[in-house]
Length: 195
Image (cartoon, rainbow, N blue to C red; front, side, top):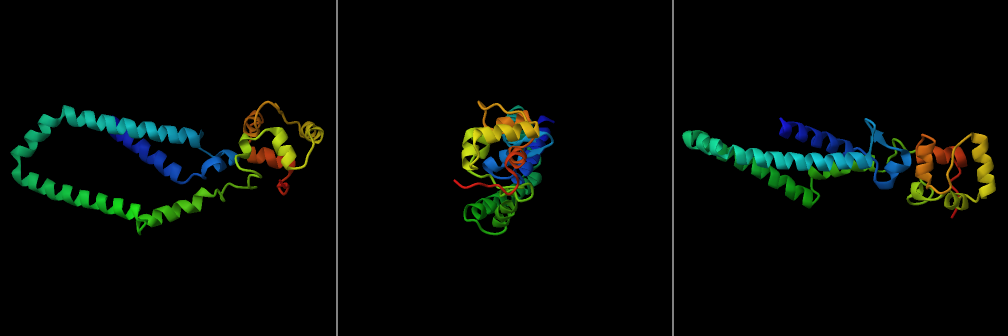
C-alpha cells in the first residue's frame, strides 16, 4: 500500500511540476497548486520517489523467497514473464534513447513543457530584473526611478505593509499577495522601468 500511494503522489507531483512556470517566475507570480508552492512540490516529489524506491526494494527483499518459488512452480508462466520483461525493458530503453536524443514522441513531451515554463497563463507583468522577488525595496525603487520618499508615500496611500529589511518577495507575503501583484500595485502594470 505504501508503494502504491508513494507512486501515485510521485506521479501527481511530477505532473504538477511539469505544468509549473520556470524558476524564479514561479515565485514572482506566487504560483501554487493545492496550497503548495514550487519548492514544496519539488520537495514532496523527491521524498515520494525515495519512499517508493526504498519500500519497493524492501518489498522485493521480504518477498524474494515467495517470488522465486512461484516462478519455479510455473515454467510456462516464467517464459511468459520473460517475454513481458523483455517488452517492458525494450519500451523503457526506447524512451530512454528517444529522450537523450530529443526525438519524437519524447520530444513532444519536452515541447509541451515549453508551453508552461514561461508562465504566460499566470504572468501579468514580466519581472523587471532577474530574481526580482529577491531584490530589496531600494533596488526596485532605483530600477523604477522612484525615490524612497516617493515609495513611502505610495505605500501609505495604498495602505500596504513594508519592512525595508526584507526582500520584495517577503514583503509580498506580508501583504498576502504575489511579488508580481505587489509590484503592479506599487509601480503600476505598465511601469517596467529602465535599468
